[in-house]
Length: 196
Image (cartoon, rainbow, N blue to C red; front, top):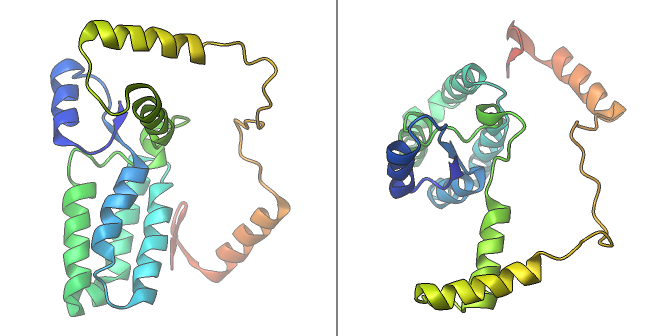
């Protein structure tokens, strides 16, 4: 189940779908921590930490995610110990996004599944702004509006032009060369982990 980090959604998932995996939308995580990280006065440090969090998001497994977080904290230990805003941010991030029930926002949490619910939210926004005008309706009026929406959106799209969807990543020679350069530059700690 993919959603934002709202406690009510988590509670509903626990009560209604106790065996479902509770995934958290990466876009919501990113927007939430962006409000906190901007309190770090050193903008270059802020950018570096953001870049590291983007890398953490593409962790391929829970173990990689946990080790990545530990390495990230270790890398910034000096700044955490000497800058109050950096310490506050890392404490917030760990509590809110690492040790809580909303910590399943990395790619490996659900391989080959979406990591954000942006498309669904965009559709919801269109429905609200176009069809319901952000108003609540009684059930009979809503069902009439729903019928109109279904007729509008259930048309044959055979003539539509779509962008190609790739189910495998396109890895170019440039990416392979960058990988070789990275391996040569940094020390291997263990399988797939490098000291930066």
